[in-house]
Length: 178
Image 1 (cartoon, rainbow, N blue to C red):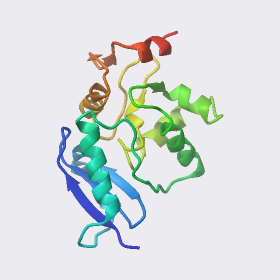
Image 2 (image 1 turned 135 degrees about the horizontal axis):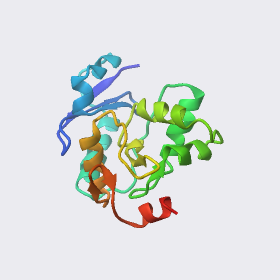
Image 3 (image 1 turned 120 degrees about the horizontal axis):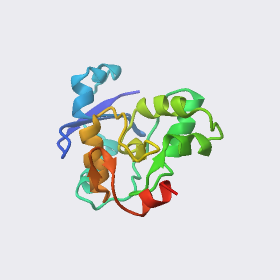
């Protein structure tokens, strides 16, 4: 199946979105591209498709604060465990936060916190599958493929205040700390 690429400028630098004719299959942020992760995708057919057009529209709307939930379809490849984690991430609403332990419990593997962290870190479609909404148990920003500065920007778009790489406001934080 053909694989297409669209380069989208954004607040976090260039985003590369990869899609087939059905769904987005990959998204790389600028820092990931510099680290060589773009080699994981072997496109590329010339031209555009409807999936890429919709992905760009939705990403631009997200960055301008006008999109709360992505509807562009995604197709991800991974282990059953990774797919369960990625599916759980998609249930975290805009502006909400979860810890890695919360995600582990939600997929009925409460002791698999580190494995959840690894699966979250290997998310092939960040932002659209919102792994940036997962933080440390003390509300600290932890690993993110696009870098912690990028994670901070994404969370600030969703209304969070971050001080010294920790979430410092809001009902989502108060609920986490109870």
